[in-house]
Each structure stands twice: as C-alpha cells, then as structure tokens.
Length: 338
View 1 (spheres, rainbow, N blue to C red):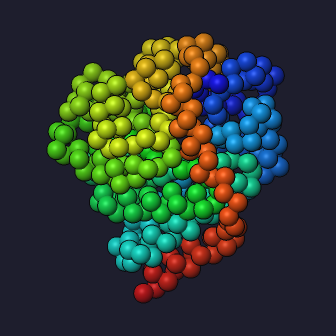
View 2: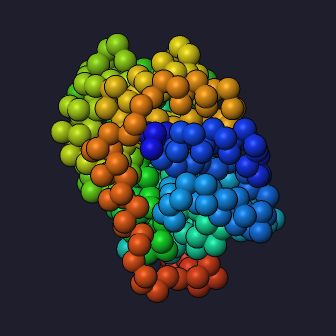
C-alpha cells in the first residue's frame, strides 16, 4: 500500500486509473463534484473502488461541509447550512447549537454512507479572524476557540454516529492567513503566544481519528517551510504540543502554496511527518509522478489508518437522513423563535 489519497478524473474509473491504482494500491481516494452525478452512479463508483482495493473499509473521502463547499449538491442532494449558522445559533442557545451541529453531521453522514463514502473532510477547527482571508470565512465555527471546539466535537461525534470518519482541518490553523493557499503561500506572522488561540480547538480534539495540515508558514515555529512540509511543526506542534496522534494527511498537493514538481511535493510532506500525501486533481500524469516518488506506507501510518477506520465499524443503529434533518431543523427553529 502506498501512502496516498488520490482523486479521480470523472464519474467512472478510467482504464488508466484502474491500471495505476492496481499497481500502487493507494491508501484511499477522494471525490469531488466531477465524481458526483447521482446516487446510482456514486454507489457504482465507490463499489468499484472497494473492489479494486480489496478492502471493504478503504477510505473514500469527500469535502461535504455545507454552504459553498459541498461536492454532493442540489438538486440530487439537499443543501446544507454553513458552519457559521451554528456559530450564530450559539449566541442564542449554546446547547441547542451543539445539538443542531451534531444532527447536521448525522445528516451528512447519512448522505455519504448511502453512496459508499466513509470519510468527510470536516470539521474545520480554524478560528476565524477578522483579518483572515475569506477562503475560511463562513466555513468556520466562529472566532472563539472553545466554541469552535464544542461545535467541532459535536460534528465529529455526529459523523461517527452516522458511520463516517471525520477529519479535523487545517492543523495548526488557517484562520489568521490573509491569503488563499489554493492560489499562493500564506504567511502568518503572529508570535507563538498569539498562536496558542489557534491551537486550542485542535488540542481539545486531539483524539480525532484523522487530521489535515495547512499549507501555511508560521515563522514563530518555522520560517522556511509551510506546516505541511515542516518537520518542526509536525513533530513539535502537531504531534507534541497539540498531542494529535491520529492519521495526518497533507492538504492537496496541487495547491499553489506548494512549489516544485509533484514527486517532490509528495516526498516532501511524507518526509516532514505526514502519514498520507493528498492529491486531488485526478490528473493521471501527476498521479504517476506522485506514485513514483513514494514508497510503502510506514508501519506507524498504517496503524493510524486502521485505527481511524475502525471507529466506524460499529453496527450501532444510525439515524437516517430525514430523521437527522428534521431534528436539526427543529432545533434551529426552536432556538430562533425563543
């Protein structure tokens, strides 16, 4: 098995993808809107990925947050509220907001499990900052660290209750960044004391099964490399200071915050301490370059992967989509009417 999560070009596996994936056995896959047409198509696609890997629990990831980040979109699937919705609700009724966030995550999990997706890159634990770029914006649970942690915890638990693994992101915090890492490399100049605020939600959820790094430079910790490529940040801040021991994946290797060829990007994030390199575009040439640059998954990374996926193997009764949506909407309506 190779330490890669890879994207796909379209709604079905191509012959080239089948050949590459059979040869390298990637640890998992990630889907985007180009891969999500309807329920029947997605069930067929995810079944083909499980058959190809030979693993019933092969990680199949998606970014299904709500608002502007939703790969499974209307009219085939229901629209989902933004994280900011629950932040605003928290101002009115904190416990209701927490329970509404949990029910919302259960609804997301029901949507995903129906089509064979078992990992959601959610929740964001980035603490919103007024000077930060809008790439985070309404995707954040707010600007108060413990509120972010409480709503993030409810989301992780709701996903787990619905049979889906959650991924905390973007460790160690993207909220202060004044640039979009999809387009350029952000630099956060806050000192170490100020950055404690950003770390707090991640420390509170250090037991999360999976996490994703930020392509952001924090000179207070490492002036030369972004977090995804910094052994100092991964070992000293993410693993030690935060205490996160779950599966750690990089953010997408295709983002413009990173430089160099794709092989160097993949080997770089793994050398820095990421367990998995994430490549999303589905470009077959890029995926071949990434695959050629990495070896076998490490023993520690495979153990973390297995541990993360085992969190969803319970056969406990799971809320269905209609039930979870109804509970979420009733909680929101009750609080708003108070």
